[in-house]
Length: 199
Image 1 (tube, rainbow, N blue to C red):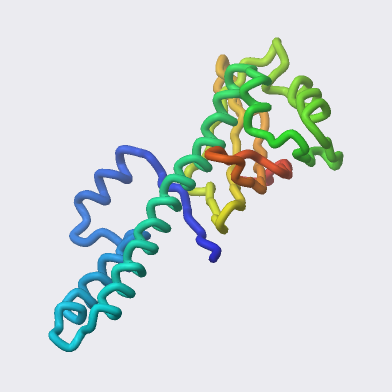
Image 2: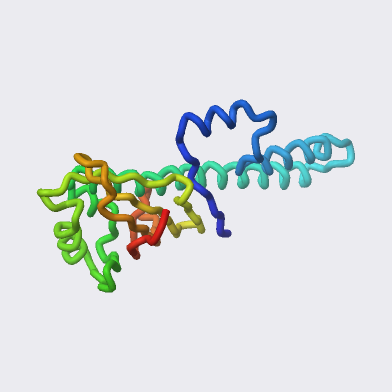
């Protein structure tokens, strides 16, 4: 099952508007609550046998387990984007490499880098990691998305690389990442980075 999620924009204005709205939009888990409401009376009926009730409970437990697992995975995957930004802003190559699988690939500037050594070398020579540059990264939340499918996921996000001293945008790029679950963590199996034309 594939599930597409847009990452929420965490800004005070948007949050205030949402709270002032007379009706919030349906949330990802609302269908489970509606299913419970629709079927609670059915299993309480005198005609409902033990097997019907047990089947319904099993389905509810499975649905809630899936919802919880998906929520945890979404949080972990969204952290990949956050750690990516932290690593670039602090020139921490080790932190950046913690996001990649050992046999990962990264494609940027028309060239593909394979494995930890090549990917580490690539980041060490990119603009944000050069000692003379002091760049911070801004990622527009409305342009980030996650598509989750069991133990695999895709993550899309855009980056504005901003000179901390002047406030000027030094680069604008986007990343399309394929992630895999390794134990309790999600790591990047493949990253494709390209220059973005507009935001």
